[in-house]
Image (tube, rainbow, N blue to C red; front, side, top):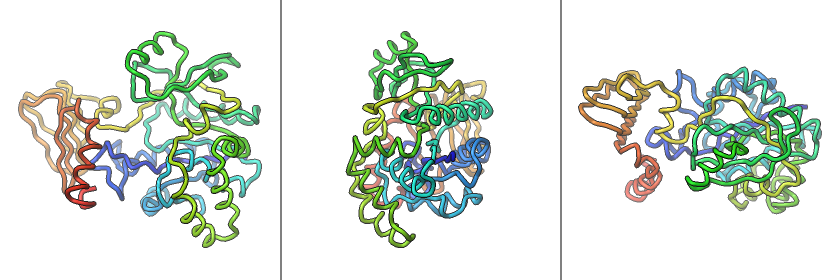
Length: 356
């Protein structure tokens, strides 16, 4: 049977001060009044029955996730005691679903991307499930054809063609230099790594057993607990000790067989405030207003964000990120937005968790 897992455990620190410790970016309603998590769920629900959709997230986010997705039963919400990156999340969800359905074919989906058109996404996902079903020893990744030499994404190099838009994978490359990214774009054989996959539960678990045995042993022990109370205790005991590593580094780069399927969609990883320029249409002066009310006089190329009706007005400023929350206002040059993580660390050191 086909199952889906939405990975929604990220903290989204680069979208501070709106994204917080107890209210991460995937819950924020910045795009058409719907959270990124809700949009992800609706995309997946067009392909997979709701009863077979699961969410793996930080335990602290479970109430927010349940509020966003009231259709999902409690047993489909998987809470991590703490984030240990995607290898642990993949292993835990695969072990639990395999226990529920030994023949499970799992699609892993992200909770923080904008993907359009939805219909094309759905057709690609259907094909990805079919590839995993017809190639039981393969791991399937969905790749995005790059539109620019971006150094913030991982890349997948394709090799032997299997059918239209489907290839064997040659190798994975994590966040190359700009010169390398330019080269990849010119070669035309590389995709952005979307972080979305399909595979048989038994196949990904076998790869984990081979490449990350400690994680495999832990998630298997957790899944084998017979009741919810003992499983929660085992999860709290074992999960925080797992290696913190992505599934790409831990498994995909050295898996026995990986297939890449091209996802011909407009795909935006909403991981930073400057990414809003790829999602929200700018005004005639290039200002992107992610807010109900923004007013600008002689200002150009700014990104202005607030969730409430607070009016943000600017005069004669350029290329700024301005973000207003209930208790924090952030102002920085767009080029300095990558330093928000460092700033947040300084905020934590000076003020504790009050603004985190």
